[in-house]
Length: 232
Length: 80
Image (cartoon, rainbow over all chains, first blue to last red):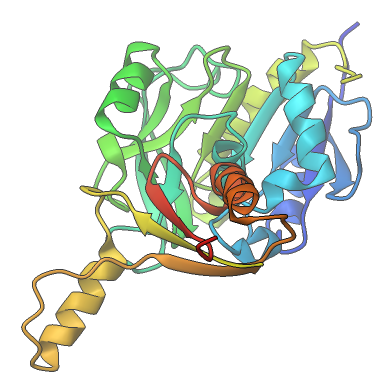
């Protein structure tokens, strides 16, 4: 069975602020967004899940460190373990790193300044569920808006991540001091991705760029081909 | 039992916050070469003795208070 309008969960934590934009964008791109409150212990039957941007739990301690313990995050971790597609955007990326689903960690920007602008991104891999509508080497213009987006891995971890081909997006110009200019990574199985830029804010030329739609529509395509995953 | 956990950025890890603090101190005329900014967590833990408390605190640090990729931690509990 393939779902005409795949159901994609969008988790809202206290402090999430891009959940509605993400849901709106997914809806505009042919999915049926399903809002999920952070206190929900399980996900509804969905084909994919998105952790949106924001400042979950005030970003206390470290970004994403507290959200990792939310019941809905546990459900997303189970969903991912069962092969479910999971995309973390900005704070969602930070949460996925803290939860151990993605390698590395997001730290305060090298400049200590909040970065809020359109940035060019280079697509390193177009063979993932999140980039199938892109071409390898393509440049995407997508906005970032974060104070803690410096993706960090030590030399050993970075070498592993590169060797496993887990880097999907890199900044095309210096942005926040990320190691290797990494902007987005996938897990080893390729079903979980995180990125700091906000594709949901770039899905219409009126917004300055529609390049984000390539990423989200790739996810919608991939979700459409999937059976709903029920994490037991 | 009162206990204190100190979390520090790992050696060699860029600490822009520390750099900003160091340059501000230099601007005040202090001869500061380096500053590193970490975090102190004071806790009241329920434990039978300092050894048990320390064991608990280590788990707390590993699971939440510190991220081992970028931070180190030190635990201080009252001497038995």
